[in-house]
Image (cartoon, rainbow, N blue to C red; front, side, top):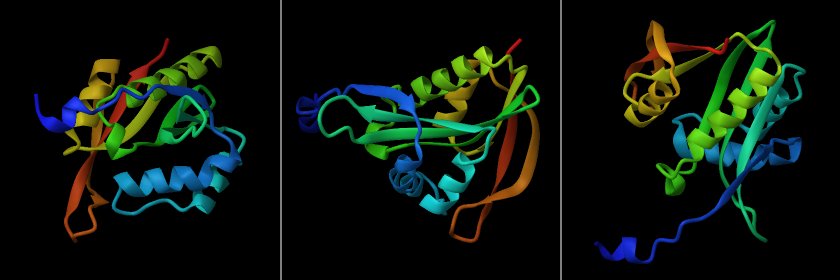
Length: 163
């Protein structure tokens, strides 16, 4: 056992509906995981749209720090994940799984038929999560993501049937 793992505490998170007041924190989370962070204004503009909804993972307790968030959109029975981000300090702690679970419960309650998402083909952790949930690849978008260093990576388009 290494020294850092001796002092690591499991932090409990609750998954709550996202509000406009969460957008600045969501932008900071997005910036921790993506080469180009979405601004709080961009996130707020999306969240203000009728078909867009989201969830935040907040630490239980007095400080209620965010551990991650997800934004999704549902139109005419088809949904898509717009973005999902988990703070690097809390990755591999089940937050992404729980955020996706909240989205799936919401979509099933709304009668959605399918859920789509795009993921960088080099993001092994995200791909493992999506495959565990049941997503399958339906297409690719070559040179879709810009990693900030000039190189472009492929996006995999994935689908989950909810029916």
